[in-house]
Image 1 (cartoon, rainbow, N blue to C red):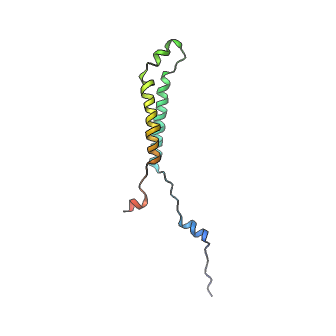
Image 2: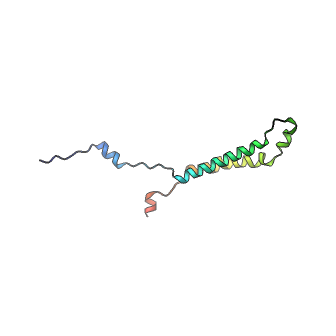
Image 3: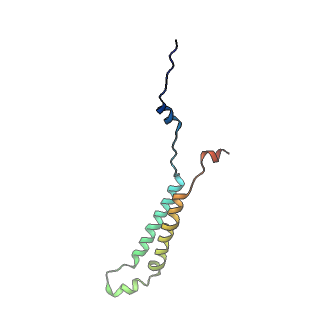
Length: 97
């Protein structure tokens, strides 16, 4: 009599299921670019901050602080980060065909 080794169904199920992380290196690159743009936007916005009451109106006449910085922040938060989340790389089945 030969004894057959019986593998439990849990081990078979685990061996058959392979989970792939949905984000690739390209997604993390987009997140990195978004982080750089966000830091740049807040840095430019900080150029309009002053504690001197005499220069208060002069510093907020700075177009980098009132136009460019908010534009960069909107682009980073509303465009680059959603692209980084939703961008899909080629799956193994697509690259094989």
